[in-house]
Image (cartoon, rainbow, N blue to C red; front, top):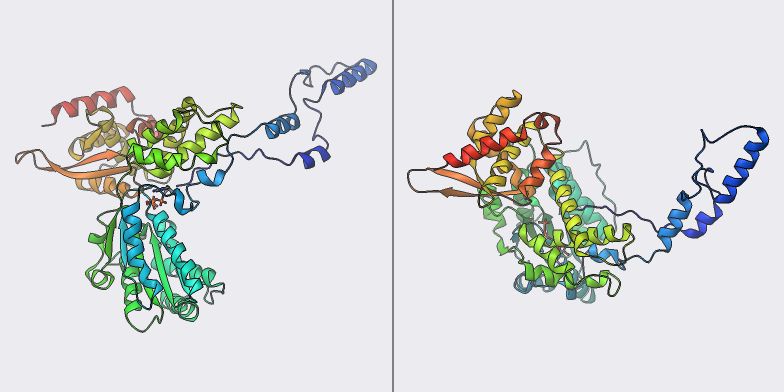
Length: 485
Ligand SMILES: Nc1ncnc2c1ncn2[C@@H]1O[C@H](COP(=O)(O)OP(=O)(O)OP(=O)(O)O)[C@@H](O)[C@H]1O
């Protein structure tokens, strides 16, 4: 996720000086004096229509003042989660680096590397490690005159298999420096596959396809297998038969550890990947990752407690390095905007509130009212339970209360559970199957990637949810938690 809060205040002072001010509001003292002289001559009083506050700073002055201010951030790219950092800035992923390198290095010789399935929570370095290894393979291949290509797509915003195949063809063409010869729309998916094969065969000896966030490629619901399963089947089969001359390897990346369970049996038997697991980072690892990027800031402008605090906040929610880096960037930008000479603990706390809110907003912006109600009910339970989790059985009762309160349709418990499961793809919420003894039956236990309070606060911005009394929900939740066996 990319949260861009940056205001680029680095306007070119030269060009600003050449420009006359757009209008005289807030102009300098001399202008104000000239203006009052002329009104006196004309016998008119302009004080009612024009600002007379001579101390008001013009926009130009403010821009120039900001521009002259020494910024705190020296290298913004190091605080951009999408920027691929140099190898020496990668910390705490030695095992995964070694495993991925060991398997993909086969591309350096005359052999097909194995397929890989990289899985683990968001922001744990899956994409970074893949890119770093492929980058190195590419460099060595260049010196050996092997045409190696990395063809990478993020499946998050790809709706159908056809769109995904076109995107692969487009990326392959970009990597090879050629043009795609089929149109994006209005042709059968088969033609897009053929075009992809043509581009690969004509330009590469060896290719690694990197399919990031693959589980998000669900495709049309009327198909038996999800689109990601069909994509894996077709790609890995093409590698094994004559359609592709180049050696190909498919690296599937997912947050969903259970993704392979949803892959159809045909695809499983042709894809057969080597698994590489990525764990959450702990606070110490996150601290080390941030310290290795501290030179993103000018020397000696970051207070000592800033990095440990950002690392601790990020460790609380899944140990996500992207979040830790986001926190540092937003804290730095807040400090710059306030004109503070240092990044302090208070900036990290303010950044934490902002980053959390942005992440929740990103998820809830596009979801239906029904999903919002499911999420609200579950977060309300988690916010009051002793361990911060919510049982599906309790969450459902609160959901029933909410739908009654606003007179909305009410789903069965199974649908409520499915809606909550669907929300796990955004890594805002996660679940585990649990049972408290033989008599209590099975239930899902939900835990949140952000504070449940932030989720509730954000969802209350929806006018239908806002209608429900907060204190009543509170009492209902309390009673339901008390009734849990
Ligand atoms: N071990 C690490 N050392 C240095 N930086 C890291 C490390 N792990 C992750 N990062 C940084 O954290 C950010 C997120 O990492 P990355 O995109 O690789 O995560 P991911 O596991 O692929 O997440 P997602 O599943 O959400 O795509 C990137 O900016 C990356 O540079």
